[in-house]
Length: 224
Image 1 (cartoon, rainbow, N blue to C red):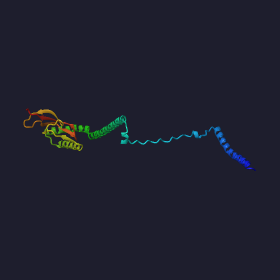
Image 2: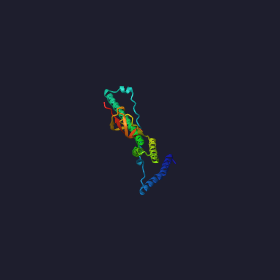
Image 3: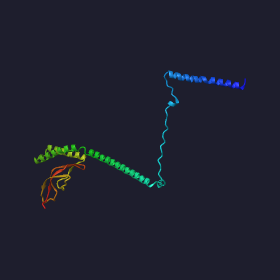
Image 4: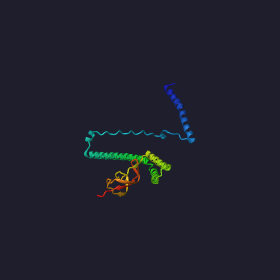
């Protein structure tokens, strides 16, 4: 057999070897189509986009600024001024928020500190009644157990209020202070200094630094 005949025989065997694989692919595709199944192709595969690279900020150097034109320099200066204005505005807003937060904290602390003021005012009404009972008993010259019980009750109420920062306001013999005293009457006593309190009609009370009830007094006013 010649060389040409051997080459022809080899080509025929190669075609015979490749044809079954090709036929199997075609059969598989036809079977898939007959079954209603779509065979994905390379074109149908989802395309994944590569993430865009972030551009690094450009560092402006003095050499770059010197190369700018006048109009470019003016625009750059204007933008720098705007940025400075925004920075100042942000700093002011932050300062205002900080002041607001501190103010609300102070108000909350103040509310907690004086939360029992309404209750204290009600207690003062009862205390006033005990004082009137003591005055009436002394005028009637009563010194029995009932009087002692009223005095003990009054002292106990005052000690209890002291625990919560409630104290009586000094009045008789003190100089008149409109912040803590309420003048109901004027007097004219030459033996007493001017503007001094002569009598106290109702005891005043304060809680910490806040006046709950001013003392009702008579003030000395000397004629000039």
